[in-house]
Length: 159
Image 1: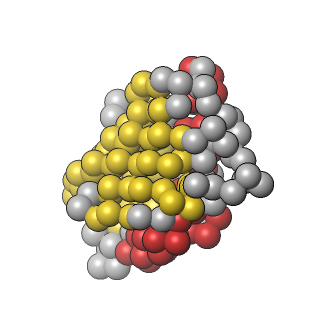
Image 2: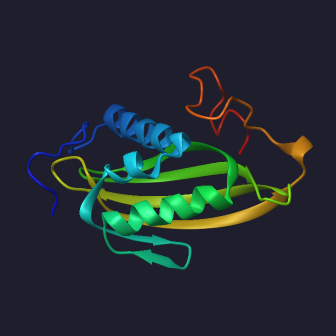
């Protein structure tokens, strides 16, 4: 369980508006590529499935993210609400990245999230597919970091 001093608003139960806010905060965090900061959004005993990898606590989540962003260079992510309930959110997302050989990819995925009453994510299930793309096919064009508010989302981009 997370400590009582930790809280990550918005808190469940979610409304459509607070679910969208929660998703954007997660997107902003992941686009920062700061594994230590991002890991704080998860309970100390968080459980993840990411592709075929299983994460069993916050420390493992932080290590996973650090490895991810060493491999996935020029990472840019967009997340979008799919569905929500009281303490769960389903998200679809896409991100673009390149490997150290200069090969570009767009990775498409779906995530199911469950939150504790403190707003920390306790469970994350992610399914992802990687599509090789040409650099000229990239759609996510903004400086590394937070996606600008006026940049199109997934639906706007036809993804």
